[in-house]
Length: 151
Image (cartoon, rainbow, N blue to C red; front, side):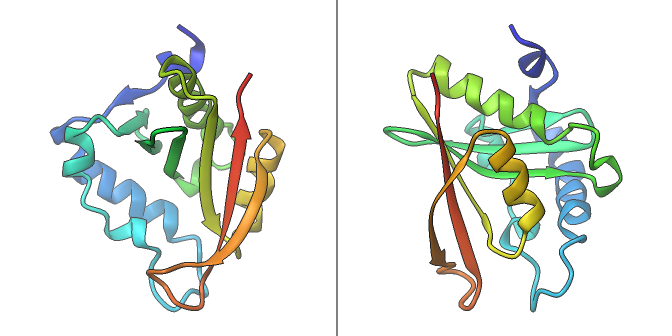
């Protein structure tokens, strides 16, 4: 087991309120949007029941969706006061390990096109932009699709 795997645990029902609070804090830094990003209002209960939510201590989370040919990172969130400490990298490494252990050779994600710091981080971690599209749930918002092929 790698260090990333050992630092991530699957969320339980007892984590519902802390997850919601963490999500609100993480997305609060994205000012200038006409409304909160969708992950802020996410109902984590069904995702927890499916084993899709991982926690990096009390300061980070990741939500994963297994697809037929890839693993989708639906969300990575970390508390703003922990930015720059590598906390976002551990959940992403966890996702990559989970993909490989599931026999999936690719991890995909998407992010808001305005969040250039996130895009730059993903690029440093080996993700490449594969396209841009309008967010179907938020007209006028542009999403950047990204992917990483795993060895």
